[in-house]
Image (tube, rainbow, N blue to C red; front, side, top):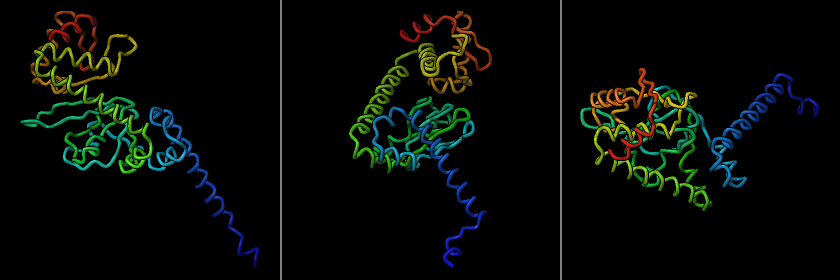
Length: 256
């Protein structure tokens, strides 16, 4: 009877072992992903804090143009872009979008509204097929309350973003159309870099998106791009933009 009580049928034992082993592999892989991609946060956490991150970290895949969160929704998660590109934008008059910020790997977003105790003031969507990670803000809040280094990390991130927003407001309100578009191209080049030819910006944007990023109409963006091409500053092939005279585009950006 004792043998029967402790005997586990082989199929169940194998299934249980495989499930447990699979979970171990999955957890180990996830921990490596977090350790590598979220190194700036991972390095300032202790063992228990790292375990909480792993236990509460979820990966998501989003198709191009799929909404991640919408304006006026309540914030729940800290989002981290692992692969792809994400845009933050507001819908303006007549349905026209104003792109506020482009997110690149590995950057964090979606947490400001939670700290401000208000709904989202912008919408986030995948600019292209993307992979993101999320952590509940309730977990982040608990970790911050017990880890001053993590608190300073987010203060630093928020301060940088605020400074960038201030600079963008000045550029959009004081620069002429040519200066605004040049500023946008330089920002894209600095965020995403060049392809192997060292001149093609590593992000392909529709004219409408370029216009929304530069606070101008699509027709003005097309006309200004054509002007840069005629001046032999750019080569444009569909959505591919090659900067062949970076000094000139920076000069236009600087003096507006």
